[in-house]
Image 1 (tube, one colour):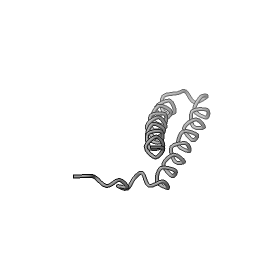
Image 2 (cartoon, one colour):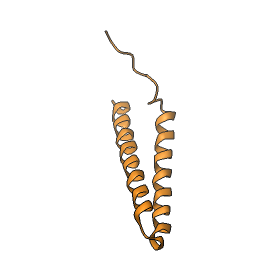
Image 3 (spheres, rainbow, N blue to C red):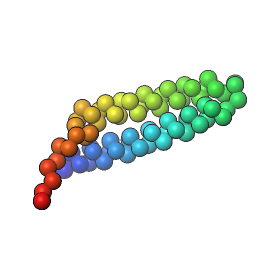
Image 4 (cartoon, rainbow, N blue to C red):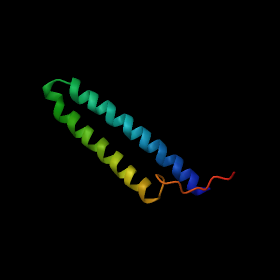
Length: 71
C-alpha cells in the first residue's frame, strides 16, 4: 500500500517539476536581459528537482514493470 502511495507521490512530483521546467524555460526565453540571470537560476533549480525525483523513482524501480499483471 505504501508502495502505491510513494509511486503516486513520485508521479505527481515528476509531472509538477516537468511543468515547472517548461514554465521556467519559457520565462528564461521571454524575459528581458536583466531578469535572465534569475530565470536561469530558477531553471537550474527546477532541473535539479526533476533529476533528483527521476533518480529516486528509478532507484525504487518505478520505470520497470515491477507488478505482475493478473490474467
